[in-house]
Image (cartoon, rainbow, N blue to C red; front, side, top):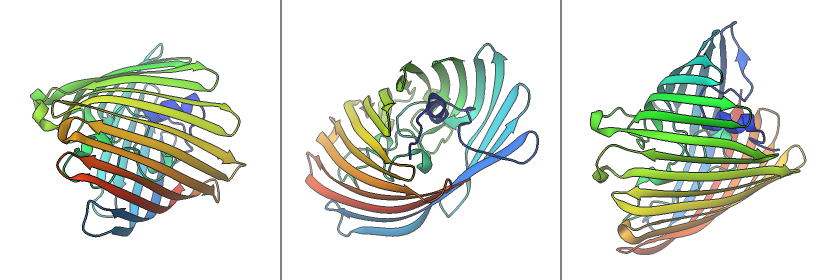
Length: 326
């Protein structure tokens, strides 16, 4: 079972107003799609006094897709089992010639790993190493999940897509609006360099002061699926956290054993000058597609992180997840 193996799927993960997954038509101009995932997790983290175990509704997500001749709109409603929230709500106007303008609240154009669970190859995110006691803020481990208020210009042609965004609070994890001093920008290019190879390069720059956390990010990732049943990917990030240099990277492979069974191997690492943080993580994650709409995922991750003040901690993580898409 391959995920995101075509350029259309990759662009759907990177840019708004690109619909790549199946939808349910409601009227001539309205369609819906969504997913529900439930997860059992167990994290043995030496950085905490007790193990963390949970059985939770991870996410319930419903997307409303509205389309007219020149204008498209999407409203993404999500919940973790508590309070529903509007994760994204934006309007896209087609100017013709491959150019479009989007305004509203939309997802960042940066990062290989995206926000929705059904777009991941495993349950956990690459740069989530644990509680990370004594260092490393949440922004870098949530790359790819940031929703932003602003406007975006997008140009698409054949095997190339480019976008420039003027946004408020580039690295706010919940898309909260800020003030004029926080205004920043993003720019991203996605290129299908050859059959099966996709390369994406982008940057995000925040206008706030460095005391707020991450304020600069340079991101590059590549994915190759030109070998039958195999997907390979790599990513590198360079960023500033509270004014200090930091970087993170991942390599991963996903192999499909026929139409239903697949397995992912991933290694990821991050380093920050702030607090002398250094974290690494190895993940193995088999998955099984019971139907076209129901996926089961098992993950085991092991790694460690250390900081100058607190020393090093080992972390082991297990997840059992079911994802239903519609």
